[in-house]
Length: 506
Image (cartoon, rainbow, N blue to C red; front, side, top):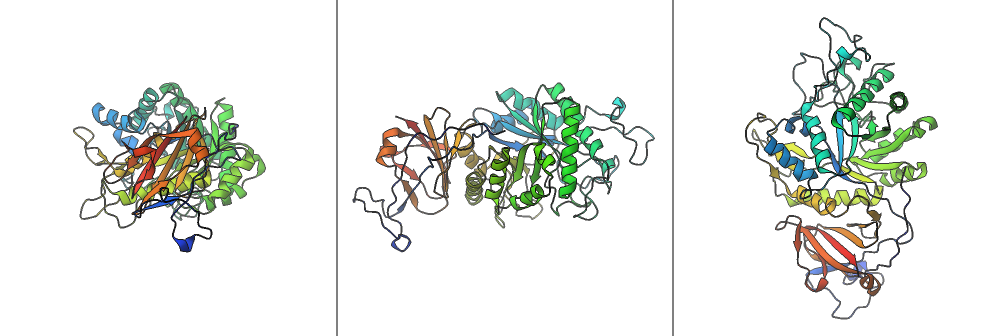
């Protein structure tokens, strides 16, 4: 459930000057000393003070698919990656989503994308045929040596984060529980791929894996998400990644079965759902759940591959009193070639993140796949998905070049400063998010300036009397989440930048 929040106890205003006259119905008078230079624009930012904000839990990533591969790299390489994401000098993430693989049948010709063949934890006995051989209560049918690469990351994160939050999620049932016999979906993309009546068996599989990994890795999975992007037309047998379609009715059946299986094993883990690809499908899924199913959900997850109806998802979570996560997103600008220093994609990514925080007001924001394969190869120009790019097709042994992108540093402007326990403070500027420390002594504003002019942000006398600018952090073409000087305490967002402004109470 959401933690109770206290109202904001300070007044903060910003004066607006020098907007184009045609956009100003009532221009604000200001003296010459206050007016911005001709090459800058002043904006108004007013944090809301009349209602509590969401207590933020943190940032993180799904471990699929990169962790399955990189967890098998030499220690120097994989430790460096873990430090970049979860270390004190890295992004300081605290959340990880572990992908419980379904697993195709032995002997299936490889067809899934690099890293996409996440191993399942089942073992098919010699001589067993068909799809009805699996028995959950037979120890011989479980393989607890599976998925060593992704599991390395569980230990690495636990070693680096004082209070990590782990979530387990599934993209597909094991092949023998599917209609098509493939973990990539049914023959038809809009058909459900779990065999009818297999909800309890699949829930048993997922919850047993959660229980076993918790014991073996000394961690706790707070939540388990049994379906992923369920009510879409993404998943079909010839697709190159694990996935499964679920109608809202079948989603509800799976949520009920998962909740029952967790309680049977007496686990503290609760169900997260529906991990839908966007908000308007989330709303359709939720509308299809019976009241009893809704009551069994301990966390609402939504992805942000689309921004329509995000405030509706926010309101559903509020009305239900259920914690909301933005549990998956990544992006790359179309037709923008792969470039580790590409600021256009970094700015677009940061703008999208700001929109998610403002509209969803989630308790967490989780990246999709933090490491992506190099994509500019074989004559292709590639794309800028991922925060770090590596050659994931290279042999596990040997040297591995880690290419840190501008998106990584844009992410750092958020995750290093909007910390777990901070409270989101809504602001009236569409390019800014705000957060307040638990003791009210630190105010953080992250502003994305995609334009070619500087933006000057001025606090009112009341705001200045309570807070002083302590630090400005910039990511742009010349800076990588770098602390920069702020002459005279000026609050200025450079052109084409992501800027973090840290204020301290006087």
